[in-house]
Amino acid sequence: MLRFLAGSVLAVALSSSAFSQQGVTFPTVPSERLPHAGQAEAILTLPPKAGGRTPAVVLIHDYGGYVSPDQYEYYGAALREAGIATLGLIVFRPGSRQLQSQAPSYFLPHAFGALKYLASHPSIDPGKIGIMGFSLGGVLSMYTASGPLSSEHLGSGPRFAAHVPLYPACWVHEANARASQKLTLAGAYAGLTGAPIHVLAGAKDQLDDPDTCHKFIEALSPDARKSVALTVFPNATHNWDVGRSYRYFDRYACKGKGCDVDVVFDRDTAQKGRQIVVEFFTSNLIRAEKR
Image 1 (cartoon, rainbow, N blue to C red):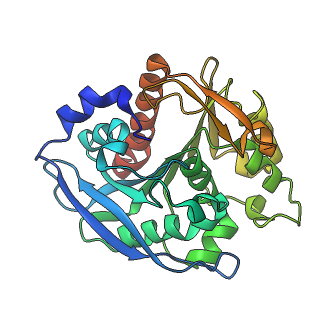
Image 2 (cartoon, rainbow, N blue to C red; image 1 turned 180 degrees about the vertical axis):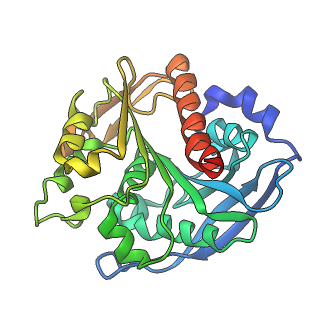
Image 3 (spheres, one colour; image 1 turned 90 degrees about the vertical axis):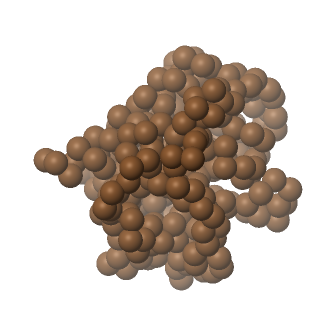
């Protein structure tokens, strides 16, 4: 599924030879709880006129898989115009049924591997690396803000400096935040890293109830809540920014029961969401350097 057709004109305009783009590979970073070791692929693109070490943002696709470098360009091109490098993670490609059947937590070693790779890159500022993602990628963008999970995978190593989960199936996070010991990630939200988080969700997203993201944040400790901002777009469905409307079955929808999901492309919400994303990362990765 080719994402972000909403921004195809902008993406073509900004995805020019001015950007330095290359395919890269790096090791995943497993933990005792999530021991899935291997190699990860990604597309690294530096901003125009990059000089010295620049901030960077990792982007992670949904369960449709990675299709092409254009997949991330609706957000990626705008971030690079703001002076932020992008790393488009390739977790799997369409048709990878075995991988597509895995729970989101299976791919956490990929996300932490991306952070470790960028932190060691000579063109990237290791203290100014953010992460954002869509659906599956949104889940991972939230999980990587977990203090316990970050320590399990990276020890005292680098941490993500900012997180933007888009439509991240908040019921999954609420369940983990309420600390059921039967869950793979039990205790993950006992604390957060303290990095700023801005969750973008839709009130008509059928993966959740309209108030599920609010309930997730309420389930966090008072100290952890200070790191989290939430924007709920009142008319937005799941995948509101993919550029087309359709219906599909999602096994994680209806709070894990599985049901059909109606996706309605909303150009206005897509534009507002992109503006929030760019402003958030600019504020926390670029302006933060000057404070």
